Length: 108
Image (cartoon, helix red, strand yellow):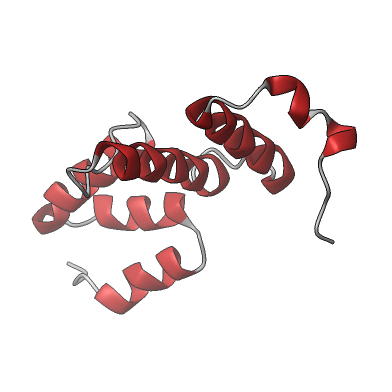
Protein backbone atom coordinates (compact mmCIF):
# COMPACT_ATOMS: atom_id res chain seq x y z
CA UNK A 1 0.00 0.00 0.00
CA UNK A 2 1.22 3.44 -0.93
CA UNK A 3 1.96 5.94 1.84
CA UNK A 4 0.52 9.45 1.76
CA UNK A 5 3.12 12.01 0.72
CA UNK A 6 2.20 15.48 1.92
CA UNK A 7 4.65 17.17 -0.45
CA UNK A 8 3.10 15.40 -3.43
CA UNK A 9 -0.36 16.47 -2.27
CA UNK A 10 0.74 20.08 -1.75
CA UNK A 11 2.45 20.15 -5.13
CA UNK A 12 -0.95 19.61 -6.75
CA UNK A 13 -2.38 22.49 -4.71
CA UNK A 14 0.53 24.80 -5.57
CA UNK A 15 -0.02 24.13 -9.25
CA UNK A 16 -3.78 24.74 -8.99
CA UNK A 17 -4.48 21.11 -9.86
CA UNK A 18 -7.37 20.62 -7.48
CA UNK A 19 -8.90 17.62 -9.25
CA UNK A 20 -5.56 15.82 -9.05
CA UNK A 21 -5.15 16.78 -5.38
CA UNK A 22 -8.61 15.47 -4.47
CA UNK A 23 -8.07 12.32 -6.51
CA UNK A 24 -4.79 11.77 -4.67
CA UNK A 25 -6.54 12.13 -1.30
CA UNK A 26 -9.18 9.60 -2.30
CA UNK A 27 -6.49 6.89 -2.43
CA UNK A 28 -5.82 7.07 1.31
CA UNK A 29 -8.34 5.85 3.85
CA UNK A 30 -6.67 7.84 6.65
CA UNK A 31 -7.29 11.05 4.64
CA UNK A 32 -11.02 10.51 4.11
CA UNK A 33 -11.81 13.54 6.31
CA UNK A 34 -9.62 15.75 4.12
CA UNK A 35 -11.15 14.23 1.00
CA UNK A 36 -14.67 14.95 2.24
CA UNK A 37 -13.69 18.50 3.21
CA UNK A 38 -12.45 19.21 -0.32
CA UNK A 39 -15.52 17.62 -1.90
CA UNK A 40 -17.76 19.75 0.30
CA UNK A 41 -15.94 22.89 -0.73
CA UNK A 42 -15.42 22.29 -4.44
CA UNK A 43 -18.30 20.04 -5.44
CA UNK A 44 -20.94 21.38 -3.05
CA UNK A 45 -19.80 24.99 -2.62
CA UNK A 46 -19.76 24.71 1.19
CA UNK A 47 -17.10 27.31 1.84
CA UNK A 48 -15.15 27.99 5.00
CA UNK A 49 -16.35 30.60 7.42
CA UNK A 50 -13.06 32.19 8.48
CA UNK A 51 -14.37 35.18 10.36
CA UNK A 52 -17.34 36.27 12.42
CA UNK A 53 -17.33 39.65 10.66
CA UNK A 54 -20.23 39.48 8.20
CA UNK A 55 -18.82 41.94 5.65
CA UNK A 56 -15.39 40.34 5.53
CA UNK A 57 -16.98 36.88 5.52
CA UNK A 58 -19.18 37.75 2.54
CA UNK A 59 -16.21 39.12 0.60
CA UNK A 60 -14.17 36.05 1.50
CA UNK A 61 -16.95 33.80 0.21
CA UNK A 62 -16.98 35.69 -3.09
CA UNK A 63 -13.23 35.11 -3.49
CA UNK A 64 -13.53 31.45 -2.47
CA UNK A 65 -16.12 31.09 -5.22
CA UNK A 66 -13.73 32.71 -7.71
CA UNK A 67 -11.00 30.24 -6.72
CA UNK A 68 -13.45 27.37 -7.16
CA UNK A 69 -14.52 28.68 -10.57
CA UNK A 70 -10.93 28.91 -11.84
CA UNK A 71 -9.31 25.85 -10.31
CA UNK A 72 -12.18 23.39 -9.88
CA UNK A 73 -14.78 24.31 -12.48
CA UNK A 74 -11.99 25.23 -14.96
CA UNK A 75 -13.80 28.37 -16.07
CA UNK A 76 -11.42 30.45 -18.22
CA UNK A 77 -9.78 33.13 -16.11
CA UNK A 78 -11.26 36.04 -18.07
CA UNK A 79 -14.78 34.66 -17.60
CA UNK A 80 -14.10 33.95 -13.93
CA UNK A 81 -12.89 37.54 -13.47
CA UNK A 82 -16.14 38.81 -14.98
CA UNK A 83 -18.13 36.63 -12.59
CA UNK A 84 -16.01 37.88 -9.69
CA UNK A 85 -16.62 41.49 -10.69
CA UNK A 86 -20.33 40.79 -11.06
CA UNK A 87 -20.53 39.25 -7.57
CA UNK A 88 -18.53 42.11 -6.02
CA UNK A 89 -20.75 44.63 -7.82
CA UNK A 90 -23.90 43.05 -6.44
CA UNK A 91 -22.34 42.87 -2.98
CA UNK A 92 -21.38 46.56 -3.08
CA UNK A 93 -24.69 47.66 -4.56
CA UNK A 94 -23.11 49.28 -7.62
CA UNK A 95 -25.32 49.96 -10.62
CA UNK A 96 -24.79 47.22 -13.19
CA UNK A 97 -24.75 49.63 -16.16
CA UNK A 98 -21.40 50.95 -14.90
CA UNK A 99 -19.88 47.55 -15.65
CA UNK A 100 -20.40 47.51 -19.38
CA UNK A 101 -17.28 46.35 -21.19
CA UNK A 102 -16.54 49.83 -22.55
CA UNK A 103 -16.36 51.18 -18.97
CA UNK A 104 -13.89 48.54 -17.73
CA UNK A 105 -10.18 48.93 -18.25
CA UNK A 106 -8.15 45.78 -18.76
CA UNK A 107 -4.71 45.49 -17.17
CA UNK A 108 -2.67 43.82 -19.90
